[in-house]
Amino acid sequence: MDALFYRRIFLVLVLAALGIALYRILNPFWGALLWAGCLAFLLGPLQVRLTHRLRGRPGLAAGLLTLLTPFAIFVPLFLLGVSFANQARTLVNYLQGGGWRIDPTVIDRLHEIPMVGNTLQWLVDNANVSSAQLQGWAVTGAQTLLRNLASAGSNLLLGAVGTAVSFVLMLFLLFFLLRDGRGMLERLVRLVPTPEGRRRELLDVVGNTTRAVVYGSGLTALVQGALTGIGFAITGLPSPIVFGVLATLLSLLPAGGAALVWGPAVIALLAMGSTGMAIFMLVWGVAISVSDNVLRPLLVSHHAPVSTLAVFIGVVGGVSAFGAIGLIAGPVILTLIGTLLRFLDESLATQQD
Image (cartoon, rainbow, N blue to C red; front, top):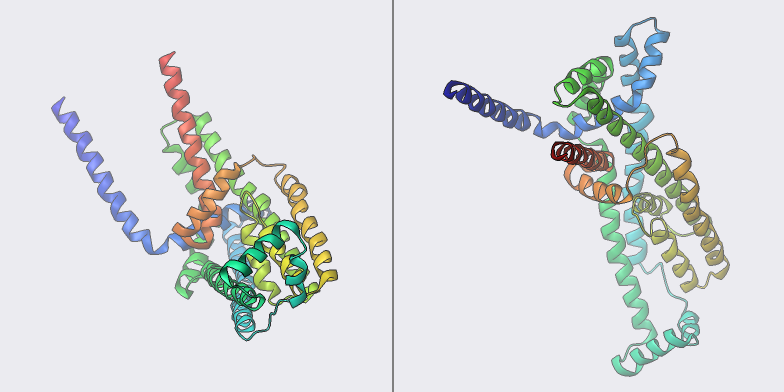
């Protein structure tokens, strides 16, 4: 009994030490590894079909997909990141240079609105605030907010590509995961100490969650961001790429979404006296927000629904922990943890019965 106990303790300690060592070895490459794993999973069906077309040569199929991946995904993403950074600088210079001015007649018209007018009059009477000061505060606040948002969005986009070493490593890992990933995954799954049905359910949860996040939340956010950028370009507002990217990111939030971008745009157009364009932006923005209720169910109809709370917390925490890939990895990890906890709860309930 003592010898058996000793062997178990020794095995646990060795496994713990090896796990810590493995974590330290892989720590610089988690981003590349997660990108490679996610892309290999999404490209898996295409790898199978291409292997069949190439008469059973998985290595050649994986090589072709690996070579095409930078041109199809990362080159456009890198160009978008550069354009975002350039337009963000232009936007800040535009605001600092006094390019945006509030139409003075707007302040006068606001005085005619009962509650708003009373508040403005109270500020004028008790705080000695003039229309010029209100305009200055609005411009300064917009500069600070947009500078922070532009910096965060630029870092997220450029961080999606990462350094040259991480990019090359990601492609290297992608090739082997495409070629051998299915067999590696099956061997890893067999190590999970649960019945076969549970292991299959875990795989289904990971797969369905990944597809739901990418095709449901991801593509819906991209469409809403693109439409927001088009709306900014039509109305003549500056830096449409910047606001399009911000709308894409904010579309992942459970509340507000793209309206947090096009809503202030409507107010800004009204403040500048462009009433016609403000009405157009309002109608365009409502259509963008309504499209979420159409696109998301349509894109995710063949996959398991993902909790909105899991997506929100997973996206925010995932980006903080893993960078841009956290947009996908965060919700997947949270959903996987929730499934494992459900398995544990069901097992405990069975044992009590």
